[in-house]
Picture 1 (cartoon, rainbow, N blue to C red):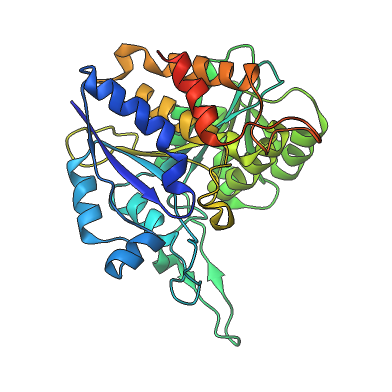
Picture 2 (picture 1 turned 120 degrees about the vertical axis):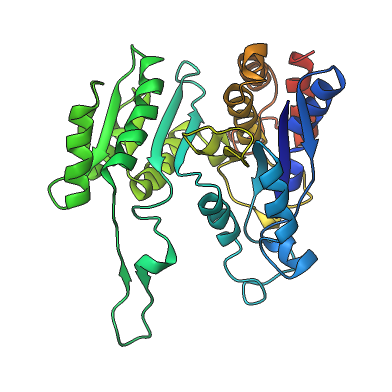
Length: 348
């Protein structure tokens, strides 16, 4: 039995999960081996409810769950940054508590043959270090961020990237670094050469250029955390919207029964100005759900992830687009509920 903790988060985070949650509840009612718990607050809504961006009851719920399905976390209507600074730290803290140390982002690119671009990167350590590797500036002393990469941690990033590359033998897999400048990148490049997979070495500036310039996109990009953060947004721009990206942060040890092994979410922000409008594009939440269904050993044999992807692709291809993908003067879908209805219809 897979236990899924629901952490809707802030802004559009709650409404963006409505379609995927409807499907999960349908599966649960039909006897699928899953249990839903929550919703539990974190981020700004956690602060509103409890005074903490990561309430103890939310952490406790994650210890009892196998995976998390999250909305977006960050700014929320009616709460200023002065009142609740840096609510995103709740997500970062969850990653550290449960050692969710590798990020896998899946960007779906309509019009490019329906292919994904998968970006694999470290999400703890490296540029995303713990606070003890940072020094804030007081305006006089320098600010400092120490970037430290452990060889074993780099190797496991490549091991996961190699799995995705093997599923796409006809697509290029690239390893992105800045080996001409950084010692961490020279470790990265050496590990790429030792990985046993034919990753093409590309400097990060050249990678950014090629992702914009050339029509063919790589199937897999493996890179250090901050490079991957930037390059995934470039791929989203090629795809047409940040809403076309699902994100997973995972513990590659996959020790089910010892707290959450992964957190799945859309990669976009909380869009507080759109909260309640129900116009946002829920594709990223559906992509995150597909990845969740493929990750969990109780659910993967049911073959649900390909069905979700097929229903999603049909919904995008066969109906009016959401506002962010609609050409000028084109008809848009009235709201996300109509879009979700198309996806759910394809899953019946």
